[in-house]
Length: 328
Image (cartoon, rainbow, N blue to C red; front, side, top):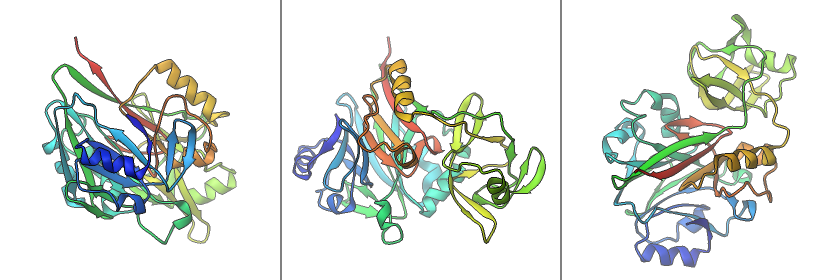
């Protein structure tokens, strides 16, 4: 089951021992009893009726009944690389990290270098808050077993599956590289001033402004055929610097994305072509804002609209999903 529910109904499910991954406004999550659940703060969702902003309901993602065991654990910034050690031999792990925390930055910059990170599926999202509350509050995650929240640590639920079940993680990214200039960086980070444009050193902010680049579109890198986005957070004209919602990496070739004319119709076609029934999905807040998804239905996909998506590493302007297939 994956849907928005009233607080009282969620409390009933927790008290019944259901294993849940939740998303909602902090005021609702603070009222939940202890139990087998994890959660992150966010008031934006893909619902059965379409994109919605609400602080009055909780999004409930129920762990499949056939899952054998779940374990729940907080991870500090310095413990994130040990997530793999706690994974079940056959299963997957769901991670939620509070936005703008040190854990967020550390995971984004280092996760692809964690030993054995790509052996078993690790999916999840970056928790956030109402954009109207920017600067007034912090994103949080919740450990239902302990009844504790944190704005500094990641929360992970490890899920064990029977031997005849195979978890598969994938992404839906409507963006692809344009035929424009190649952009490379010499430092890893969530911001940059200098870069190389077609091998020539340039100030990135000046380049973007001089060329009237639409920064609602991400930069896209081709990782062995997988298109991975890095989205722009802002341009500081005075400091001549640019900030991103995910880090750029050294020696990776980025190009600006080509425009997507109709996000909803393009997305729905891609989902229908895949014919997926995922057990977990999340989509990016930038897709929600820039493509004006409020009230618009995205095929049969429901889930939180997040400050970042995780499929082994931090992603932007992407939908992440996990499905479970039966093995013969």
